[in-house]
Length: 350
Image (cartoon, rainbow, N blue to C red; front, side):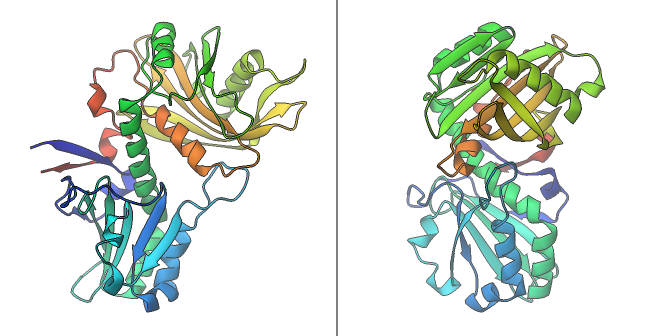
């Protein structure tokens, strides 16, 4: 039996949650259809227009955090159960609203690669529409994280097969760390305890940064300390087009939250950057982690510049790279890179 991992938020583990048998190839060996972050909702049309359906719509319609413009978390389609045919069953992300009085309480079920691969199907079961509405609203972030992390896992699988070897080699030699970034990041710059890789494109420009500094105490993992360190490194290494211009952090538009990655504490920072003295700016996301072997902090970051394009998918593609970081002493094999903490994993075996 081959073990497969699917990674959910910690909140999922506290719910009454059961998994359908999954992890197989699609029954017809088919490749899934649909775009990244596109979800098909299978729901009774009447319910879709009532409060229960609107609650699910509102969850999927939630804005992606940390972007300068409003962009919804997912692109939605919906169909009645009677029209859920063989073609629609090939969609990569599916939510099934299953409301029947045979259930005693609301719960989630999920399955992988049932009709095609890669595919994720989340079924939300509830005895009535009122409990469905409450359950969905209370677990808003769980649902968002479920499909966001599913898509990031798919990106990580692609990165494992095809990533920038030069960047991986430089990061290994400079920091003794492993990381995978897209091959398109062909421009690079090296500084003191700092490395940047990017596309140098006029738009849809994706960038990766890694830097390190000594660990002092637990106060390192605060928003204030992070912003101060980030501004210091960016001012020294990411200048603007003219003298006196440099990248800086918009501290008012930066939010931080704790993460558990590979069983260890990390700090996620997400927000906006801008070029001092210029009109350039955009979103970024950073992971600050403790390298216990060397008693230093490693920061990996993705940021983009895309003034005339939507930014959600560009950011999420790059964010997946941050989860591939392996610190010194990490003994995991390449095929076992988790997207989130051990406590946040749901394992399927078939």
